[in-house]
Length: 193
Image (cartoon, rainbow, N blue to C red; front, side, top):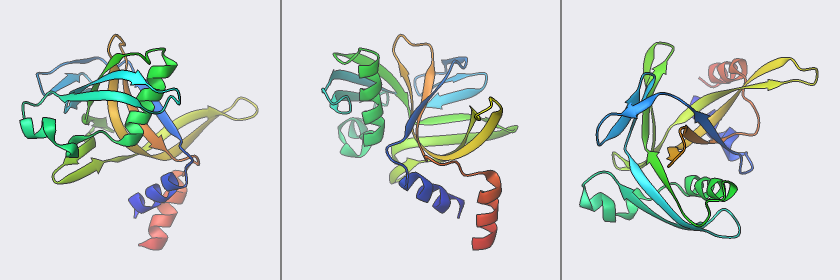
């Protein structure tokens, strides 16, 4: 039920995307992923952006998966989510990298959430189909008089990326345009259960 509420909120969103950056200490953890103190990234690939069109949302790119699986390299099942590509093209243009850049991407992140291990997937083909997890993302905003307001937004995770030469890793999400307070989510789950 929670996911149905989240899906509906994101469907109502008007092309609202976020790139959330982090300067986590993420270190190389072998050919399949990278890990640091707080998180580990897996499912590595390189995306070469060779051109961004004038609209800033489309372009030309080539993906190379770190896996040696030749079927994976040639299969169209492993194409990145179109919204992820749109954000990568948009961000490349914003950074004046529209004539070429390399992005290191990952399809999975493991971390701790309230002392519990959590794994988030954003994979074009995992166990027989696309697998994009949802997250309940917390934002801290100011009200009209400068007081902090905590708001929560259901968000679809599109991928985890790093621009080559950039120290930050980014989670790319599609978020709803309206917050969904925890109390409402709990109440709606109780009513519909």
